[in-house]
Length: 114
Image 1 (cartoon, rainbow, N blue to C red):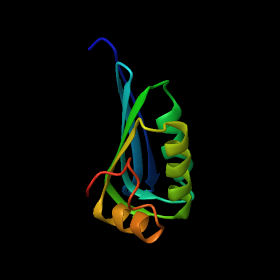
Image 2: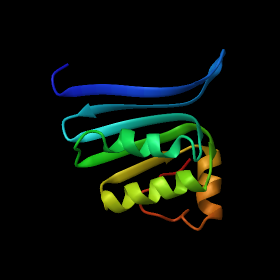
Image 3: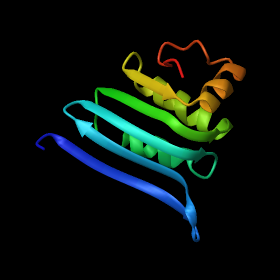
Image 4: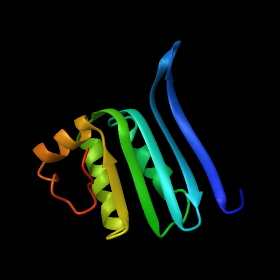
């Protein structure tokens, strides 16, 4: 389809299913990033770089399949929110929403209901 670009990355743990994956699809000026699994200090930068790989005016960060989200992930998310003020939308999993609420970020305008 014209105007669309897809790319992705996953981290494999031997024979086990990947514990992290991030993929992105560009549609015009809107980048949709789908993240699944555990976002921690080993994978948070990959999540961030996946979101920054293509120039975009709007970003939707779909974290609905994220099972673990630590302080490194929060830091990457805050950096992304600073880079895309007013144009970032985050779709959290229940776990991500809970971590963001505990960290004081539960009322951010970019955060949608879980």
